[in-house]
Length: 152
Length: 417
Image (cartoon, rainbow over all chains, first blue to last red; front, side):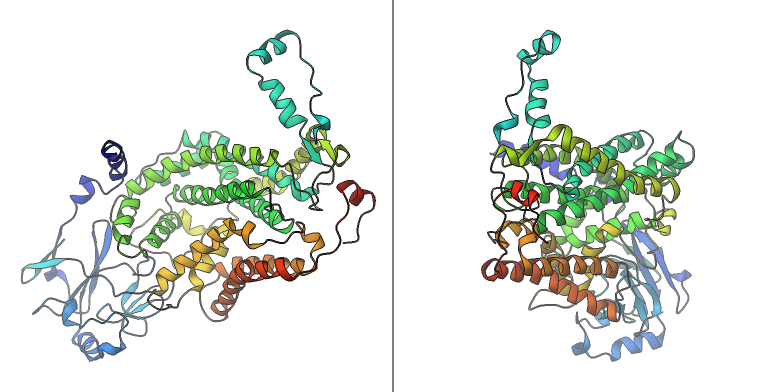
């Protein structure tokens, strides 16, 4: 039995992400190039990552929302790093079926709007309307200096 | 049944010599050419042969295409363009292959509907039906993998959205998604494995088609009356009667096929697939090929949660159930009368089901908003009510019309229907 599993497992496991794919698992980004209100899309693990320098108005809007209004309740603080709450870093993939939402500043909630099936996210990337079940995913990242982050 | 069998006399010469060692010629004659076939089969019964012809066309053109195609994310799009522009006759081979997929599904849906209407799935033909459903599922997978290969925008985003369906499964969803894609997003490893599977699956389908035909030849064909063959007077040998009729049907079927492949090869496709795949830009709307539209509409129609199941997972469950339910049709429709021809109430609900399927196909091509969403929900509701409620209830309460005593009687004195 062990031999059978030992023989089959490599055949299954070979389909998992290979070493070269995993080797791309961190990426650095210099935030000093971003202006207030600007958002860029970079690629991390082959997926788009939205890095947004939010305006005070957008932060205010996100903080003003009561948690009871949210489908996937998370505070704005939980979605940013302390002291760097103007920066929002999220994987730019709709949690419904994987399309890339348009934004920021789109939809009814000053955030992101997915063209495929009409999901809408607010200025903190939280799901507010449409078929998507969860907020936009925050990737693991840390500030390596005041203006630089490492994702992954 | 046995009237046409045993007429074979041992050949002399090479054929006789060969048949004593491997009776493949004798077997072909006895099992296929002399196969006793009900004499009242209509043109609805020619779609099996048409599907066989379509499968052969797909395999032959696919083999040719694979000799020029490059399954690499950087090169795939250009290699398909190269096939269309530079390879000798490549433009036609590519068109026949992509249009062929559409024609395959057209024939497949007609074949499936014919089986449903005439009760071809009922005892003793359940194995035949189950194998047919399996061929349907494998054909869906094969067509999907093939659609990804040109690596245009629609290819890429179809691969993204469809693999994402598996992420809806609780707990194992995300690891499963990465395992299917071979990465965190759809990329080169995904393309490579899809090419490999696209090459493999048609041969698996071919093997199951052999079992499907075997399972057909054990009980013999159903027929429009649904009355079993009772004597040799009810049948004619497959060759020449049905061989010629089926070949004629294939030729007729090839006329619209050829017209589309020659004059409008892109009419069924989507313009966005002429844009190379871009992982950072989603096309404004993602629409599958027409033959997947009903199931796409079913997937999208579920935008509400039930209990603890969120809308995404529920959509996926309902989408899967819409296909899986086909496997259970022999046990859902238990009416003794096989043919819809003698079931007045069944005929009505069956044709409403066909219209419902066509409506879902139309709705799948429309954006999910306003009246389209409401209609899609009604469509999904009827789809499942038909299989799970109407068919079992009709089997119990419907009064069928009297059946003819035999196939011969129905041919000589046709019932008004």
